[in-house]
Image (cartoon, rainbow, N blue to C red; front, side, top):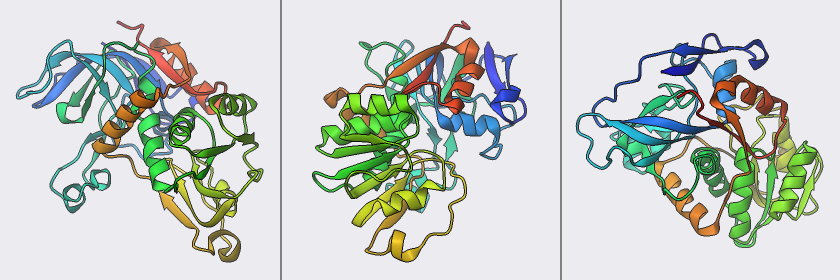
Length: 335
């Protein structure tokens, strides 16, 4: 099979991805072999490719928003059959026995593993996934639409929950890419007033089309104090900006796996009055199931831009440059 691999992490403009020939992976015990139909392009893929995240697997194949069909079964698979339609997401494996797993916080498991970082992901013709971490997908929708839901959607959902919006909340979203535009739809469906702060004119246009009450530049103040905010842009300089926009008792959640350095915070201006700053670490499978059910109920839809899988490097360059709103999805043209 053909697969994109990170030969040596570096700027995407220098083409660190290479299209290589590899054997079709053999599913291990309890694993599914998945023929990839589509794979969303996540900013985490960019961090893996450029080396913002440390190398966990040399020559890894990125991609963890995979929509595909079960093409083979490893020993002991009990709940799936060949031909089933499945989604493969970021969280790939946990130990299931540590204190975090036992208390329902498997996203904090110190032995957790991740698709497209610890194991080869979906920028390829085939990938594998433990059956316990695969999501069943309905057969009625196309391959492109559900792909961004599998990470951008799930992480955005967890980040929104971490920001603890009260009923009728005033919610601010900093950055408005693949994850934020799905998070906004959830917040709006639950009765929040959403204010979007982002640098791109096209992203601001999309925010207003989706129902945001305002859309301003990322360094502007929102038109009213915020009860909750989520920082999606991986820019540490925005942390004090977002904290200053919070009302008393407001909560800021940082959604990304990578963030540039945060400047010194002024206690009186940015943290006093019981404002809180929280991080978001991956997600649990319960988050995934809850979000996918909620997305179906409220008709949460990603704004998608399809790229051939053979042009994955271009999609990553466009993501970095902010050349599209919503989310990019790679459609398998290699098979």
